[in-house]
Length: 200
Picture 1: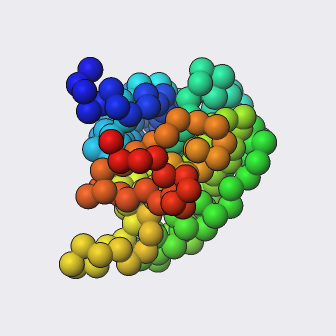
Picture 2 (picture 1 turned 90 degrees about the horizontal axis):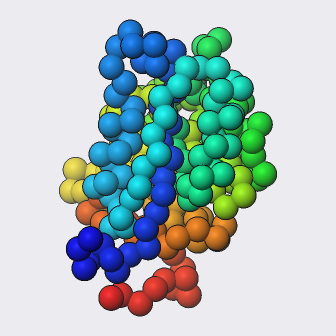
Picture 3 (picture 1 turned 180 degrees about the horizontal axis):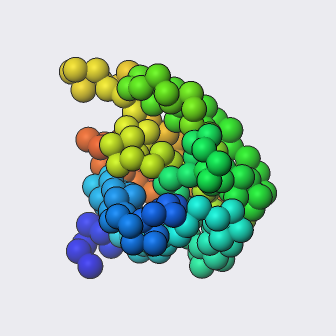
């Protein structure tokens, strides 16, 4: 491990792609590579990923989320299954395992996505805390995943609508997880001054 990585807390992250067709091999899953790519670019921490590709089955989704929490994942990100279609049950499965709901994440995800597409109002993403893990439902498309996490930016690169990941590291702090640090050119994490570690 490089000296720079050694200076940062290791973090275990669960990534879950939820799709009947991808999990049955009808087409290649794009959700897991998109999540892993974005997190690898955004975080300074050494990351160990726990990846799962599963069908749109509510009990299976809930069981997978519980498994990842019990494995010690500080953060679990899901992609897929958050629309209004009959098979879209990710939010229900997520809420079923929640100890606390975090409604601000869903509200902000829709605000970000509305900057790009009017159909963002059809998304039902939720975020919850279970034990010491933050679980967040993300959209199903790789482009929308990055937009939701990073936010909407103006032509000069300034932030127009904050991405949700700006608040994730501090939330993980508050529930007892590792100190997550980000590359500011991808996403700037926000913490109050009394929660910031000295720059090393």
